[in-house]
Image 1 (cartoon, rainbow over the protein chains, first blue to last red):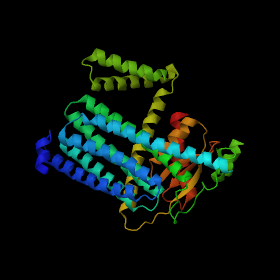
Image 2 (cartoon, chains in turn green, purple, brown):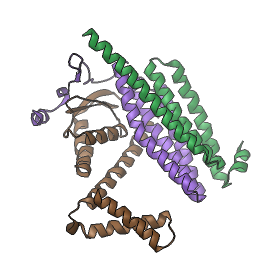
Image 3 (cartoon, each protein chain N blue to C red):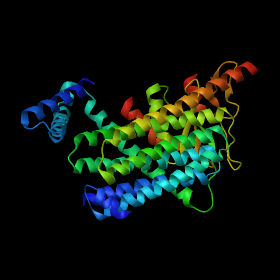
Image 4 (cartoon, chains in turn orange, red, purple):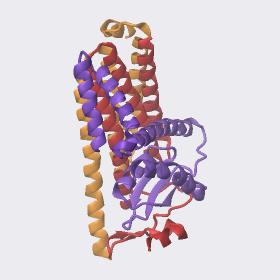
Length: 108
Length: 132
Length: 156
């Protein structure tokens, strides 16, 4: 695996290749841990938080991938990912909050 | 030298993301988990984007530097807003706090007959006098 | 605001007259324009330079606090026993200006151990979730003397 990144890396330095390889490895572990929380729950808000954090992890993954391979076009995907993640969280939060407020004010 | 800086950014960013993910699994309730995801997670993605900034500066690609800085700014601006909205929605849907939680100043503060959130509960006397 | 626009214009003029139009030259022009505006602050009757400096200080403080808070969370995550006692604390707000409250709430979310949750309708209390809520009074004091004062200086 390390020689793959050394081959792809435009700077070609061994430390950077090492750092990106280890970094991507750590992110894969993070993905699994977050997916565990996503499956486990227990509440819907926990799952939304996990999804939101998965978007953050995706952005980090792309950033490290860019440094490893030099394909800077992927940066646009990272920005779009951040946008979509934020909008998803906001949409969920507003939806839940409004529904709950309506229900509570009817029951009062 | 530049490789070293970029490599350190990459490694520290990934480390903070991993710590945030461990926190997501270990922490006892949603609100505490949110601390891990927003703080450590934001710093993690920020450091990784800084690595891209350094990388773009080295290869003389101004567009990459600017886009990475824009992404960084975007993350720093949206992370607290998303966390705030999600925390409020979670409290609204009745997500339980950890049983070892000390205080809950927010309990019973929502008044739906008037559609307001009462504020004077946590205020000091001096502050509420200023307002009246 | 006018002084800021003037500063930008000075930066652009500097960069286009002095030589190649590069980011470094624009930055140099901006710094020179800032220095000139600082020299002329009495004549132009502008508080722009001092306020821009306060703003920069606020941004640096924010980055420093983000760094610190991530470290605190990391220590909490990695320590084998969970010793923190979380809770929701109501912080009294000194200002009822929407911009200031927004900035304060966002800063609080990314600082050590606190996460803003909601603002009361009369804008008098900001409810925050704190990682360590065993000393609510100390928490209120530290926010009041730290962030709230700095934001007031920069934005008032």
